[in-house]
Length: 240
Image 1 (cartoon, rainbow, N blue to C red):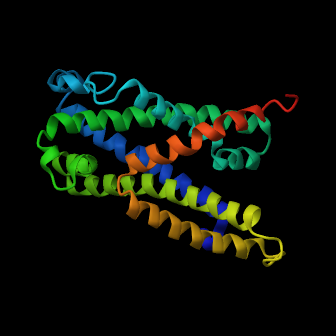
Image 2 (image 1 turned 45 degrees about the vertical axis):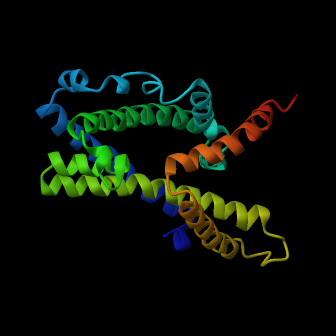
């Protein structure tokens, strides 16, 4: 759908993926909190899961790097593409604040579900897939078949909403910004389509080289964000 629909396809599919993401986790948490209240879950939670740094699992340097990972937004070209595509500056500003509020809610939902998994799946560390399988295993334990299917689709929507957005913005960057002018100069759509192919190959290569998404984000952010953050933020003040 990216190949044929471009940015319009990203926007339309994101609407569906948004509904599925929030709906799936809302259903999971509704079942969890009904049968196992949050207070009971918190009391049964291991002590290291209640500590800010995970019981010493992360030192101050690692926490600082993850703060920089959160600053990725300011160097993400997708952020500026979305703002530039808005009707006007007021619309873009409202969109930013709504996005912050919605991501805040969604992060609470996913974190809360993860804490439930730590309590209800004590042998998760011994599972072949490890903690990566926490959400689907938790859902399979507490949800009936129909709602389980909805939640699994919600997990897929979380992945796809990220994959298509990053794939398209990378393809646009390769096809319009990096490609030499003599390569099909009046066929930006075709160049962007080739950018999708190149981005997919590079993305799969990175996924195979660094199978853990947590390690991949940590590696890329610790290399790219510190060097780009200050120069990009300086451009917010053209007079400097």
